[in-house]
Length: 131
Length: 131
Length: 131
Image (tube, rainbow over all chains, first blue to last red; front, side, top):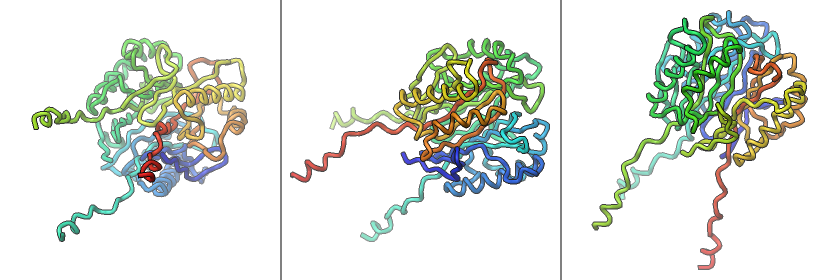
């Protein structure tokens, strides 16, 4: 099946679509001067954009892994998460603490989302009704 | 394709099924007073229940990530793992050390399992034989 | 759907194929005396072999997670990564620091790859042209 890559950088793609799944790279804040809550909000906005580019949205997120440089930031991260979350469509989630490549990064988030199939032309039943 | 969520909590679903895959959230022990071996056994029992709720079982686990708050607990975790593992159907696995949200949690486990397709009614060949 | 396991060890499979996806276990260096760059190159060679065993290759890697025992080894890891990477087919990637089960391991890498469907016999259009 076709593989489609989004937001390519030198060493990785920001997201890769294949067979109805979108695999996200670890997303970090564009503005690393923000605190953990701000970085989380920044990242979730970027995830929304990647999901949209692939024809899907946060209601179809299947699983998310959140990595905090300091697990003490869990409450701050959750404030941004709670504002963003679609409460009718909650993904599976895991949160752990790990040092990240850039020490200014407080949060990194990855995940897998479903991509809905393209909308087909509607079946031509009405025409048959006229036959 | 349809997305089905299991064991929903305020911020996440305990597992999410889509297109023949079950994506588990990070599972932690219900009884966080247990040691690492006990917490692992507790978690694996919960995973069995989530797999059963989604119509699958541990023989169809594809990959597992085990996070230990202290990597020194690897031997203790493995004692519970070895008792639980279906040796004919071993998943891919990765084990790392990371601090977890609640310091009482010694172990967190996530993974992806295959869900078998629903059993269809058998083809009606016998009826044709009578025609 | 069928589940096929590769490189089975006592507690896990080195990779598990199902429904067009190959789920890798965390891969570590066969020669743990190497530095982070050497261990990364060693691991990537092993990943190539697992992908080949499953009928795929690095051009179909969808996502990769790299765990470094010391995040200060990121530059060394990236030197091996850059030599190995197929620049036309970059996977999604996340890199974090976490202690690993064996303290000699500097790097552990896991990921998910697409497996192309088996090549079918070509459609027999030429024969119809003769009819």
